[in-house]
Amino acid sequence: MSMPLLEVEDLRVAFPGRDGPVEVVRGASFSLGRERLGIVGESGSGKSLTGRSILRLLRPPGKVSVGRMQFDGQDLTTLSERRMRALRGARISMVMQDPKFSLNPVMTVGDQIAEALTLHDRGSTRRQRRQHVIEMLDKVRINDPDRVAALYPHEVSGGMGQRVMIAMMLIPEPDLLIADEPTSALDVSVQASVMDLIDTLIRENGMGLILISHDLGLVSRYCDRILVMNAGKVVEECAAGALDQAVHPYTRGLLAAVPQMNETRPFLPVLDRTAWEGT
Amino acid sequence: MFSATRDWLTDTAPRSRAQANLGRAYALTGALLRNPLAAVGLLIVATLTLTAIFAPLIAPHEPNAQDLANRLMPPSGAHWMGTDELGRDIFSRVVYGARITLMIVVLVAVITAPVGLIVGAVSGYFGGWVDKVLMGITDVFLSMPKLILALAFVAAIGPGIENAVIAIAITAWPPYARIARAEVLTFRNSEFIAAVQLQGASAARIVLRHVLPLCTSSMIIRVTLDMAGIILIAAGLGFLGLGAQPPLPEWGAMISRGRSFILDQWWVATMPGFAIIIVSLGFCFLGDGLRDVLDPKHEGRS
Image (cartoon, rainbow over all chains, first blue to last red; front, side):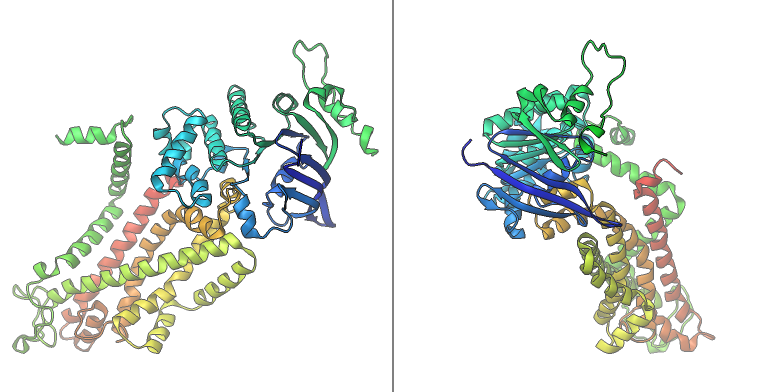
């Protein structure tokens, strides 16, 4: 791994609480090359917030403070909002969780995909953009892209919606894709095909991927490296293949809680938080 | 042949997008016309529009042609609504007045709706002090009665029909800003706005391309409902001599002239009054009907 694509050091996210600010992400650090990084952790462990803070798209009143955050040599913390906008979408983009809520209900699918092109590639003509959109829809394996481009989001299924979302986020050919639980809103049979699709496109374009998920199996299958987050901290970092040799008690607890095929245990173990929190 | 068209329109499995859209329009029109008041409203507004367009063909006389020998004649076969103090045919004047009324209504709508939309959308989208400042200004305008404020503006910039339009527009936008802001607040934190943000769209682009289109349907309904009020204010200004100036056949101004003869020659003031009432009612009915038809929350309920 030569120069890392993204470096994050001591990322902290805080929200104001009744008794002063509450830290939700508490000093996460990691770096990433053109590889596939998985971030796992339970709900509320700060995975999604980490993803959003990289793009500096945290809604107020959330506050981000970070020791160092560099993307491809650029310091993300000091970049002006205008430069940041040029980066969003074009260099870093993000696939969101539920296509039902992340697509604008009153714009056709094709127009929404073309939006990123209009924003970042001003030279292209309408016709070129349309051509590009159709190609992209074809690439995310949508049949009859001509027809689908003219549909509104409520007219497409969940799996199709997520493919559209992927097309929308990949069309400007970013260097880094953040996928925030891209398959949680989809049913199991569609999940695999959507993940395979993301995987293929990432490999083809040689991009970096941050896959945020709570599904250990999914992450170990589609990523090279895994970060385990708990209560806002990175508690373990390991290669995807070496997940079963993880040492941190939280990771061990998570692994133990995954049901096995041919299960023999009468109960699935519950996380025993006393092992690492000291509470 | 009609039944074939009808079947094509009501086909539950349309074969093309155009057919689906036309079918939807057909269903909406049907729903609108099933509501008797809305049908009446639509009829009145359609009549008003047609009258305004074809005024020269409909009016039997020139609206400003004076005939002093026949002044203050009661309604008769020759003059359906009688004549006024200068012997002008009131019916012709009412017909030409439709043009002025329609023009005022359309101009005010064209000016206020976009202004209100943009102020409201910007205010709702950015929040914070932008919201406070813009809504503060809106509140200042809202806190004064519309007619009084319009009167003050016309008095300041001088009487005349264009100034009346400007004055009404200045007083009419705040409710739209309020509605637009409320709409925007409901979806400004939604995921699809976040999605365009992370595509790198600028705030202006998000407001114009992604936020405004979502507010338009409630705006259309509100504007239609407000048209009655606009007509009344325009007539009120005309009545007070601050709107359209003589000899323009504006309904409010006509009532004002007829006021002097109201006991002996009642028709001079009454005929344009009827026109105002009917047209205002028409817009109210139409707006109510549109709200019932266009609001998806009411769909399926009768």
